[in-house]
Length: 123
Image (cartoon, rainbow, N blue to C red; front, side, top):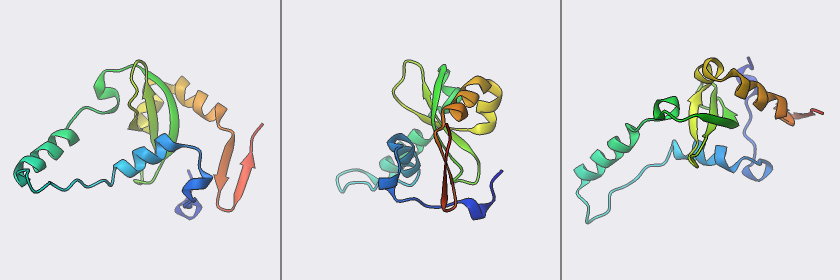
């Protein structure tokens, strides 16, 4: 496992993973109720949205991994599902157990690895 010293922030224009960026940013979105909407109703709506099933709890068949992050302190994979356009961040320990072949395929097809100030090209 990598140490915290190996974590870096890259400018968005250097990255080619819009789905992973969107998933990461959505973790921090805060909705504010409009003046015409009851504030308690807005709170209930946000809680309901947060309680919806995610990852394997949705009962969908995994398709592929499109990205990975450990920004929350836990390794998470951004998973795409068969017959679904919405991706979910799923803990890597769940994905490793339930569909190891998808994890292996993700790592085998990874073209670049970023380490501190070095980019390692894999061929």
